[in-house]
Image: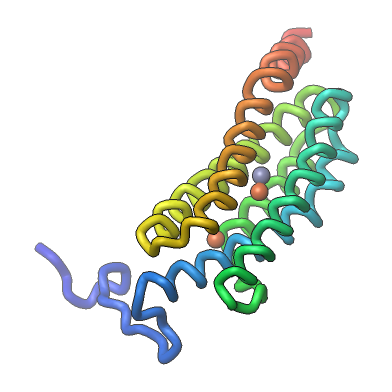
Length: 183
Ligand code: FE
Ligand code: FE
Ligand code: FE
Ligand code: ZN
């Protein structure tokens, strides 16, 4: 039943600079995540500025500081590996940030917009959790023990950020947002 010519299921030919070993793929993915973290650090202040609930504003501002620390950790990793810390465009993070920005336009300020900001932020955290989870596995496979420790520290922070969004802010704000709909 397969149509050989369907664009969607074609075998992709590799570019000339394509990774041919796990280490190269690992470096590429590190370049992707440092690009993503740098983009996020630039996007977060707008999210904080548009949030209303003080706890949420504080959580986002705290996440800016945490993210800066994660970028420092990535810099250390590139140094340990003897590679340049130049980023490589992360289309996923660009898209997630764009979605976050459109949620701002699509919601009135207040608890509904806050709920939207949390939704966008959790999608971002989940992307990061997936990315760092994979990076930890790659680093372990490659026997990069020092790098594993650094990546695990960041992975724990991403999980904590996600949990923070879920408990403290999420419940309170979603109840308010539901109330707003009723009155
Ligand atoms: Fe991060
Ligand atoms: Fe990416
Ligand atoms: Fe989407
Ligand atoms: Zn994060």
